[in-house]
Length: 328
Image (cartoon, rainbow, N blue to C red; front, side, top):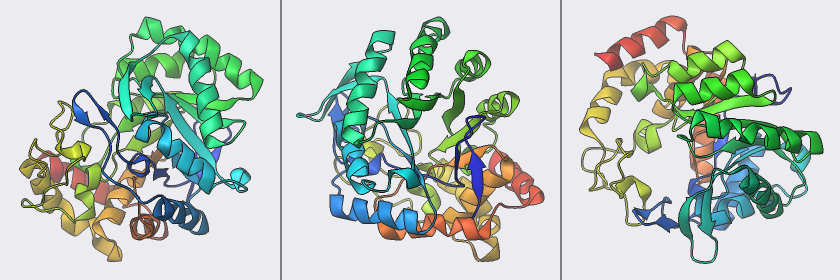
């Protein structure tokens, strides 16, 4: 079983984690849906249990996913198994749990303690392994003010380590340099963005884990989507928000990204891999710091992802060839 380290925290995790955004179910903000549509909590629980059966012990969620629902589902699923799992969650986006409405951001130091207390209650645990700032563009100077309270939470045993979910290299650099217990940066990284390595380079420089958000390009790298496929109502991929580049406003996949996937399909599916397994293998082949966290909400999706652990990383030559093809 492939194991990887969460930076210098002393925490080891399976080579992949399970992203828990989708199991949160529907929630929304002023721009429209923020979840992935309706979800079956019983199937979510079975999926988490199957992950543990297959050696996947790293679960990444956020308090805002499903307006608290993802944390509650995960907490119930791992009850009595807490010592077997590593839980990462995030804070920063405020929400109304009863209306499933995401209100806005709160990047104050005072809010950190309020948020961590609420997450501990929803997760049914007395500590969080990795606590991550979820607002990616907080000003560097303001984010520096959060380090003091995070270090206090480490000293109190409420969190073991912390990190930042951001795609901005200067933000990653700031916490990698100044955060004594900063262990990871979570960033958007997949084979369709092969040349996007700035955050990874920061992680390698400071000994941080590179937690790969969107490693399957929001489903495109599963091979289940074509130019004619359209996501359902209530799915964030069809919301038309500015950052959604993988799918258009009509909920159909981006032709550009589909073309990139076709260009590298043969390499990714080498050695009997599925397309998704090859995409995960590419990330492992890029660096020893990467920990992809593909999202899933069914046992079948989890089993396909976990199957990549047996196949292992792509070779260095394959990694370079894929990147060249994607760039072209």
